[in-house]
Image 1 (cartoon, helix red, strand yellow):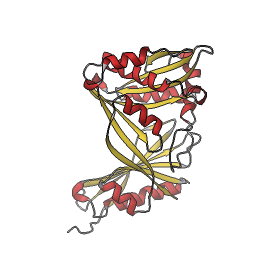
Image 2: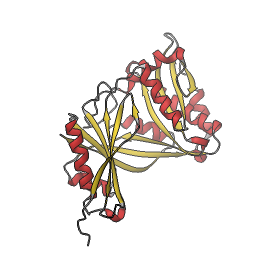
Image 3: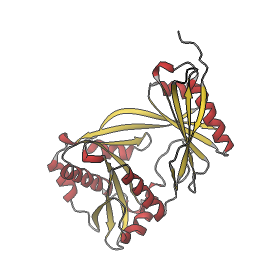
Image 4: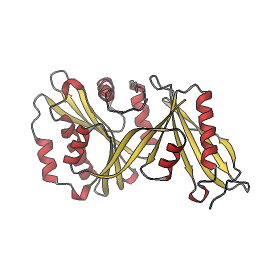
Length: 297
């Protein structure tokens, strides 16, 4: 049986500061000074999300149920209130300690995310070719690596509003407002980690404007699993198969350009059946679920 332990919680300096937000951090240590856990609180500062903070708490397995997590949570919530935040969100894997911890401390479950993986060795090249080469009258595909080229920056930034109506279930996530500077900053952040951002976009031939996009972040060295970021199509161009087209091209490019890459990872909200159907049709298989929790302050 575990017993409560006295922990000292120390604020840390986190140098990470970007145009969309910054983080506060804390370390919990026991009476001997041994680290027991940590907490990070991201304070969003971009327009449309200034009410929001995002929490991540990690406690060493041997220190759980002794009070370290609660002490870290108290410090983070106090800081969020002091910064006039309206809510704090946190994510936990289904059935894991964080799931039970958040539910027991006043957080409510607001969204379910299903994670899925495509094993590239199992992808069917002929099927991908068929999807990519199928005609989509009035549209064409383009692609680039890293930061969007200057000549495409404005139209690509405008196309990101395709994510504005992305299902968020009950999460008070606000509206992410994109401008060219933010688009470039996001790409730069990926590059600083040593990763490669690959984008495939659909262009409306008549207007020359980008009307849809899908993003893939490939790990350094092109080994392991790559992670899908956003995929979106502007509302007036939906129903034409553009999302499947772009994703199939992204998969095909990943196979051809990164032969050591093992798989592609994605996650989808529970109330987004159309994207779930696209992923299922492309061969992605569910691996686990996580829950988004929210604490209203």
